[in-house]
Image (tube, rainbow, N blue to C red; front, side, top):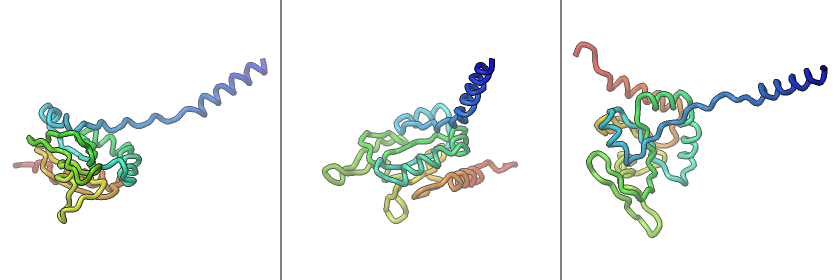
Length: 169
């Protein structure tokens, strides 16, 4: 009897000790090519994450900011989130126009849509760049470099305040 109790207690402890909190749901990323259809069905603001596969800060933003439960919840609830690889070679229809990859060397280049969205006021591109667009795909905010969860949440809150309808109008 002692052995049976001991075995059951041990199993219970192992079961309780190995339980992990559930992982937060991931961001529901929309492919750039599918954005027009999504906006037609249900208009929403759009967050575009312009990145490359070799960018360390891009990867850090993916692993920290875009896995933060508050960020995930906020983006999934009210935005289309689009991850745009700046070196993608696939043509992308966006805002009624088709954008192509532009070669800059034998094995290098940048997608024209990434140039359009990630270029700063000096004509430079930096990765990562996070761009907030309204439902008509007009730029409402652009942040270059690593955007931490608190920074992104503050930016989304600020943009929501600026675009909210004014009562009585």
